[in-house]
Image 1 (cartoon, rainbow, N blue to C red):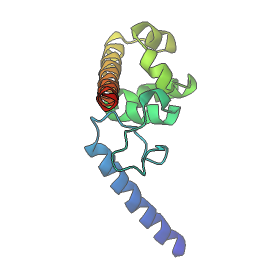
Image 2 (image 1 turned 45 degrees about the vertical axis):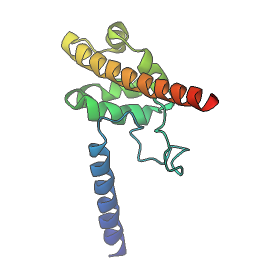
Image 3 (image 1 turned 30 degrees about the vertical axis):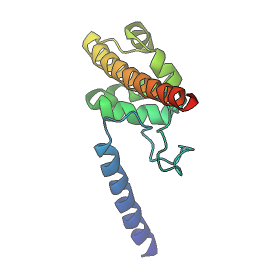
Image 4 (image 1 turned 90 degrees about the vertical axis):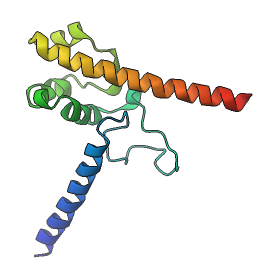
Length: 136
């Protein structure tokens, strides 16, 4: 009886986390629940940089941003141990070598990767501008 209560509580917590994550879908933040973000205690903490994402975080990103292809290609991202660092370097040919043969699928995934790079670069530029302003 205690075990079923634990499962219900755990399920409720998971649902809340998923709902929160879905509202932040377009953020560049780490797709994790925040546990891996060392800056999570700070009030204006930056999300974990994509460059430092683990394979699990990349898979969460794939599920959120390429939902229709997640079930088809998650195993490839897992087998090839695609981390944030390698995700940022990917292009059409690397996706094809990885095993994604359908050109339209590669194009959609590449577009999402480019969006992620752009958002990441914008955050980095803002940080640099902020540091430059503080130095003056």
